[in-house]
Image (spheres, rainbow, N blue to C red):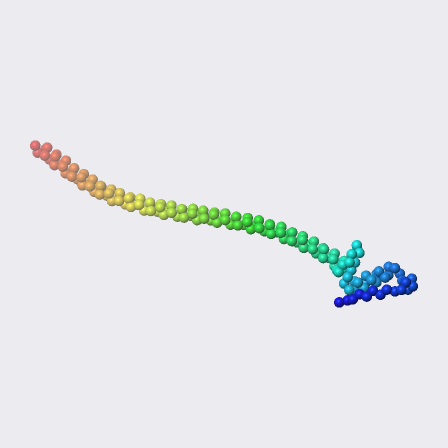
Length: 156
């Protein structure tokens, strides 16, 4: 710790000293001890230059904090927007999956219907063949009966 000693000179020795020089010397001595006077001659512990730099740093920090706050608001809005878009994308994905499943279901239904129709066609073809055989048999029987009738009429 630096101690200040004020040494006063008797008045008869003051005549050879310059009035501003003593004040400057006192300021130098106090400055070396870490004590200063500001522009309003208020007693300060910090050097006025350091005080000014501290004030500037404080202002810059406040501006930085304000900018960080704005940045956080912007990022928060961006995150909300991205979340909303992600939800919309997920909804659209679910709709697409639903539509795809519906198409697969319709395709399976059509395939089943196609197989049913092919089975009915096969049944109808078999029925047609039976009917054709029966028709041919009946035509044969008709022809035989017509021949029998004709023979019966000619014999009479």
